[in-house]
Length: 97
Picture (cartoon, rainbow, N blue to C red):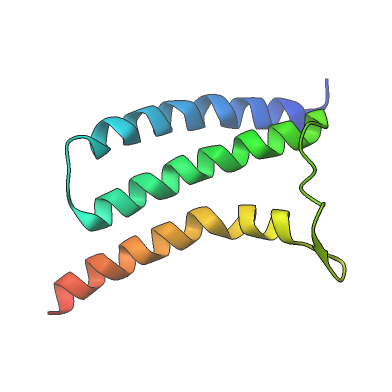
């Protein structure tokens, strides 16, 4: 078995648990920062799904290229951390004021 496939499968199992728990938390909180963290977790899991679909050949993440850079892969790489960064900025803004 390919080590990349096994690692992605394990990451998907753990990510599914984290996403499930994040969705449960989402229904119990209305705090903007926590909702952004939950959104980042859900987006992270969706990136894992897209990577798995790309490995299976169902989705082409390299369909849109700017020069030699794949736009799909860049978006997948930065989307979850963008939500986490915004959430941390909201938390910091609350503590400063």
